[in-house]
Amino acid sequence: MESSVASQIIPKIGSEPRISKFKIALCQLMVTNDKATNLVHARTMLEEAANVGAKLVVLPEMWVCPYSNEYLIKCGEELDMDKSSPAYQMMFEVASSREITIVGGSIPEKRNGQMYNTCCVFGPDGQLKAKYSKLHLFDYYESGGASFMESNSFNAGDTPVVVDTGQLITSCLLLFVRHAEILLDLTPYGVIL
Image 1: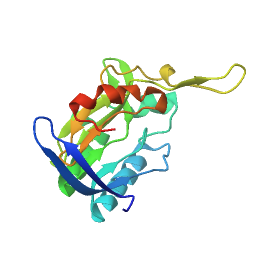
Image 2: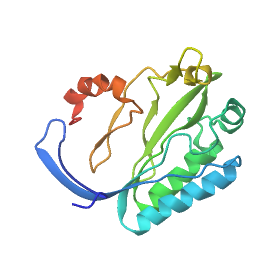
Image 3: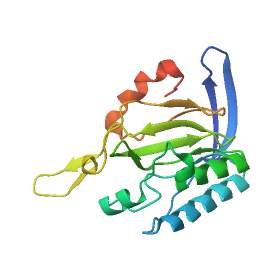
Image 4: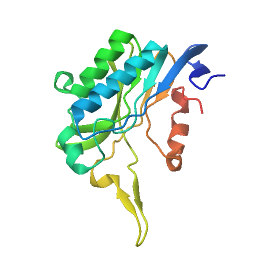
């Protein structure tokens, strides 16, 4: 089976299992310091994926800006205000015009004076189907060595999210293996491991 094609039996809550076969595209971007350029690159990749038949397209984490406090604050968006959010608007337009589902990786979200590492999922009608703010922020440190503290830039979300995209049930979880137990808690909602 091709790596870009998923074939899965997915239970629909309250009904018989359904079989879906469709192409998935995973996009990786070279992120620049310019948000507008990153939006153009992401749009191009989403449209190219749709052109080759992908029905579910996934963007990477923090694709709108470099991963530094300066750019996270500068490029952050209020995602509940779709018209004022260039990333939200672009994903809405591409999802609806190409009739694809977009898992929007993550972007820095400004909410109530705080910053969150947030993923949006748009359905093929362009509507926002789910929004997930990363629960487990990546904090890494070695005594006398390297460190990275995502919690210095973001607040943790508080709710795991499962969304039925119509093709499969996608878990919008940005997790490392160390937090895989959350997936077990989602199995009653149709997540298959």
